[in-house]
Amino acid sequence: MSLRLDGITVRYGSLAAVSDVDLAVGDGEVVALLGPSGCGKSTLLRTVAGLEPPASGRVTWDGADLAGVPVHRRGFGLVFQDGQLFPHRDVAGNVAFGLRMHRVDREARRKRVDELLELVGLAGYQRRRVTELSGGEQQRVALARALAPRPRLVLLDEPLSALDRALREQLAVDLARLLREAGATALVVTHDHDEAFTLADRVAVMRAGRIVQVGEPAAVWRSPADVETARFLGCGKVLAADRASELFGVASRVGLRASALRVDPSGTLEATVVERVHRRDHVRLLVLVEGDEFEAVAPVAAPPEPGDRVRLTTDLDGVAIIG
Image 1 (tube, helix red, strand yellow):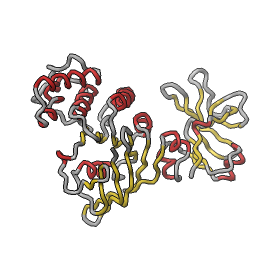
Image 2 (tube, helix red, strand yellow):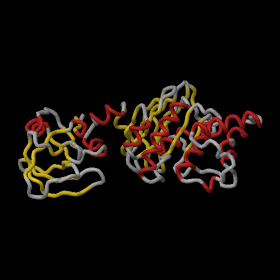
Image 3 (cartoon, one colour):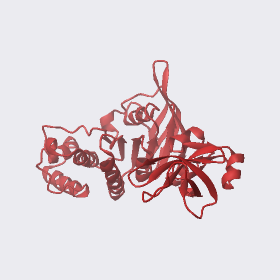
Image 4 (spheres, helix red, strand yellow):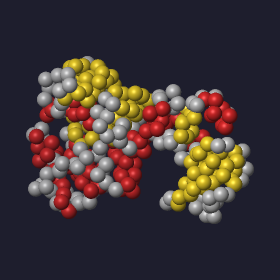
């Protein structure tokens, strides 16, 4: 079973929010739509759900055109940023909602609710009021509710963005596990590349209404399609091929993330420290190398000071080959 988008364009008046998008999601695959705010990724998700009609193009499931099929008949589960739980229902009542709509009998509903709450780490929460839960717990309930009717596709629109950073990182790991344990086919919208790379089997990078790159997370991280994508993925410095060859021996245009250079007494590059800023687990430096400014990292213990001469080594995980 698979989802296909062919030439999808969505317009709001004269504005094209999504332009000529092609994408496929295979059975059991998790695909992330990754891009900055306003790039059209949520609009595209809403079009798949049936909430936004495309101006042109087709959304198909196993080759069957979904045009004219209403939201509640597409067999898709939806999880939004704020969960959109029913405050007047307890946890079990929220999770069982879709099962009630499908007229599943009481005992089968109870078993399915218990099974899903166990899966999302909320066993024993059946009678809790959802208003008494933390933000992370509410999102787990929202996911359980979406999975309860065994949807053929789960659509998640920025499901973790309302949470604080530490909780978001942990819940992303948990969500990735839950989707795989459930065998779910999913399309996830996010603006956070850490989240996308944690959750997805493939990442589709969107910009200005178009998909500019699709690939496995590691491939997209190592080889962004263009300079704008590289910058979005954290490459604060872009070097032309000739300069990259001079400094790093790489005969290609490269993007450097903040972690690309690190202080190492045995390093081959010499630099002068211009500025330093302490972070949670490292020190971020601004250094001067042969007249060019670069970011570099140093350990928190005894970091160099502005004006110090240091040697640097290259961490290839922080280097992207562009295009």
